Length: 174
Image (cartoon, rainbow, N blue to C red):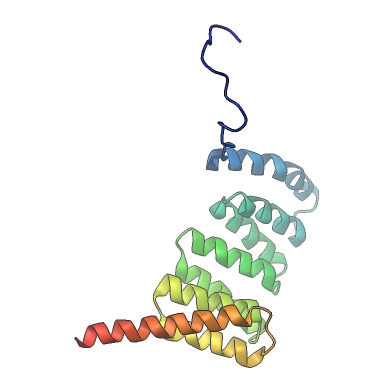
């Protein structure tokens, strides 16, 4: 133990270390390495590109993940799950318009897709302060999918958006 003479930390005194973004990047690089090796022999495999994207997304490396999702979509443009992941990465890197463009592209393949409508509402509300756009997306979602598993959450968000819109307009009139 060398010259250290202070008290030894106990498990109770030492909080678990939270990995830094650099740590997460290194872990993602290590986890992605075998997938990237497979891509060398199978470069047009959208599932492999997606797996690498998911690896980086889970490590909060959103810009890097977005590039892999984009590549996956080159080979499988109608994959709405990959497009949703791509859109969320764009949103997290600050590209709100890019995220909405990807989600609107998904609607061209499936105009009633529940997850897409949910995400459009969230991004319009949180990213654009577009209460009307959010309400429109969520009302369509509930109209197309009356048994949506997260129906209660959508209704809560609708109520919250409508109340905040009323408060904002009342404040402007005063």
